[in-house]
Amino acid sequence: MESLDRATRRHRWDTRFAPYAYVAPYFLIFGVFGLFPLLYTIWVSLQHRNLLDAEGASFTGVDNYQQLLADPYFWNAMGNTLSLWLLTTVPQILFALGIAQLLNRKVRTRTLFRMGVILPNVTSVAAVTIIFAQLFGRDFGLINWVLELFGAGHIDWQAGTASSHIAIATMVVWRWTGYHALIFLASMQAIPSSLYEAATLDGARGWQQFWRITVPLLRPQIIFSTIIATTGNMRLLAEPLLFNPGTAAATGGSDRQFQTAALYLYEQGFTNYDFGYSSTIAVVLAITTIIVAGLGYLVTKRIQTD
Amino acid sequence: MTAVLDPPAPAPPAGSRSRVRRVAGRVAGPWAYAGLIAVLAGSAFPVYWSLVVSSQTPDAIDSVPPVLVPGGHLFENIARVFDTTDFALALTNSIVVSGTITVSVVLFSTLAGFAFAKLRFRGRNVLLLVIIATQAIPTELGVIPLYMMMSEFGWAGQIHAVIVPGLVTAFGVFFMRQYFERAIPDELLEAGRMDGCGSLRLFWHVAMPAARPAAAVLGLFTFMQAWNDFFWPLVVLVPENPTVQTALSTLASGYTTDYTLVLTAATIGTVPVLAVFLLFGRQIVGGIMSGAVKG
Image (cartoon, rainbow over all chains, first blue to last red; front, side, top):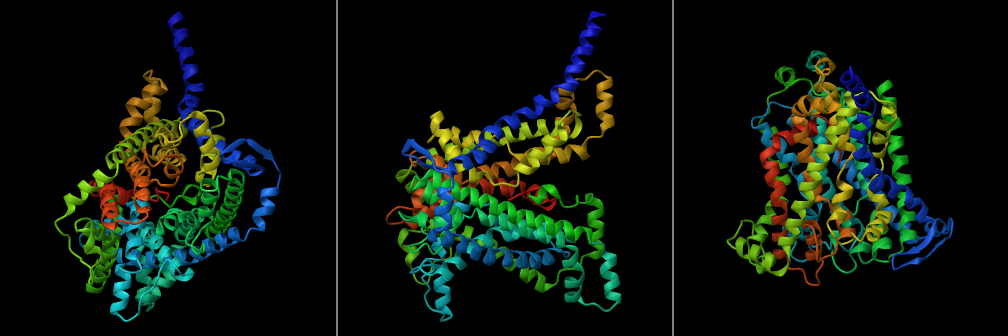
């Protein structure tokens, strides 16, 4: 009788409290090292606070925010972020669609090709950026050598705004296109073949079928990819940092010509040790990311209820 | 973010998928193969180039026309990397960091994912919503307070500082939850309950064995992400105690860059993740194609 009682009690404990024990590790660790810092950033952004002088921290309200809105370097960084967003997102989606279309045929050794397209995505951003920086080198870079073969001359990739953005965009596009291509491929394979058969009977050829059937049916995935690419772009840091490694790496080029917003955050926080100001940038960047992602989500929802 | 709010439709079972392809898929012609081979070459070239440079002497890199085939100086250059920098320490650190993070993420995600998918408890939906919502905000943006905490704990410059924040991921919990929802029928768990199994035993004897395929995919992705992580290690570690990625950045930022040396180090640092990729490429591709992976 008593043992039965104990079993019931244990059972009750098990169904009531055990689940909390199972999810607790996640919430404990994430709460302390993920969520708390994110929220605390807001508090730090309202202070003048320097890494080297923690005692001298003082509450200054929206001071940092006013300074940020009038800061030409910040707007320069936001402009570069926007430019890189355009230069990366559009080619990524277009190339990915094309590659997915190629992979969606009966291809021999298809695992090899699929692994091939995703290879860039598994390599480390640091290694890849260093490799690309070398390929884009001014004097001995392979890309300039090829350009010269075609008489296009020498480009100092890092020096110009447009050229440096193109070089950095190339790295991002190279690294992420295959990922999006596989996402598209998965949905392409779920499109019923009867749609294409009907289109063929109606006289629609390959190109028309692609734009009239494939792309519209892929719209949710295309928007998903656009959002992923956008949020990724908002925290673009390693590529501009390592494109021009050296003492002034954090400024993103001598004229800040390729400094992104995330890199500016890094510069303020970890080369100027201005923790308050850096946190302000983080907060503004987080808000921008949420707005952009939220807009994307609303658009996605709308398309699906059409 | 939307990966979570709106996961792409689950892929149909392998059998039916290949049947669809057999009907729908046009056979690839020579142009399609040419295109795919071009894509393959473009994907692989930078990695190949890094290998080429790391097997040449330093002056080969300035040669016109550039060398495009590997030379015989790879081991010499590798030795030089280990002589000039503490790359052995960087590799050890990276292995410890990635290994610990992988084991921990897989374990805790499986545990929490099981609870969210198969156990009933008050607040379950709210808690799950919190996990989904936190995926939306890049945690890198909390980097300043996180750094302040680490200095407070005296962890700055040490690899704990990299390991501990990575021990759990929202993505992992959500991923395992999605898997358990489909993989384990409720009847099976009820039967287990009737036999007197507690939830921990159900987890261990029913859920864990069933979770193996998903846990393996999650482990692969977690390992790669942890190995390749750059921003936070760069912030919190010091050059004397690096991971592979921060060691690369230090090497690349010297006053005069010895590209052969840097690219050799980059090659060495890519080998572990490349090995994992070559061994488990099929699972990795499958994981991405089922819409599982967030960049």
